[in-house]
Image (tube, rainbow, N blue to C red; front, side):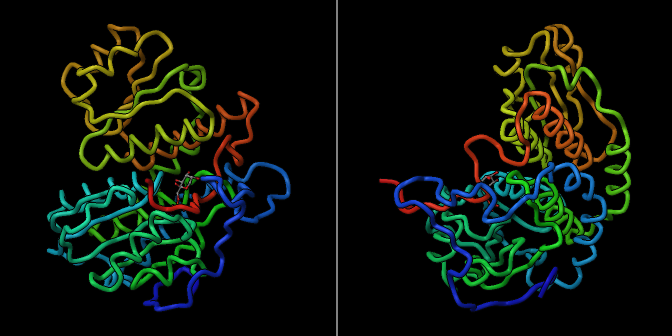
Length: 335
Ligand code: F1P
């Protein structure tokens, strides 16, 4: 069902594209077999986020039955961008009083912990660590996956699936899929996404500040649910433009990370600014970037910067160095 939800016991591995026999990144194509037809895809994907968010949020009632219920003990898992979105949702859910929510990289999921539901995030639906985890769990615990592609192994591996195919991307790096699944999850927590989409439209319409385009190093800081967004922002600039980026909980910044701030550094705050921190950043020569916009809209500014910085550096933002749409491993278990 496009853009919908279903419970599945489906048929397995169609869509898995394993490529060469021993490489750790094995889908080879860099775009899961898609043909881009020239020109960057990432800019229109970035620009479509407000509409995608509203559409995803509009699905919240339809899929409420298979998403975590209030009071459940929940684990959320993913890899790369999906892990950082898992972190953001986990903190937001717990802060909203919906119940204990832990986030794990799929490869580090603690065996033996009891949860009422496991939520797996995977745009591609083919990531090995996610599929291995779901296979280990089986039907012992209710599992639900959010994916962009219903015709991938994750749909069979999870007990239920939410498909956001309208937010899928041609770009290797995730922008609108990741934020759309977070929009759905925020809506499921009872948040109104309309003002958030409005904030993203303002961010999209504003010029990118020259100080951001010219910066040599970025440190992203967050608190609560924006810690995950800060990590995702840092990953986006690394993946897309090869930039030096770091991310921490805001109060951790003074405990070491401040050492790398200097002229040409931007310290980008996604959550509330701890008292005195902006002054300390300025004192060591960095630029503190603060925003009144919703942090998810602020992530859109990072997306725009990532694409612009890639072009400035002569890189193709749709095909980042050393990356592919999905990491599919031949030997899933280390050691
Ligand atoms: C996500 C992911 C991306 C990363 C890279 C490999 O996988 O880890 O975040 O940019 O391209 O894949 P998934 O969400 O499809 O499981």
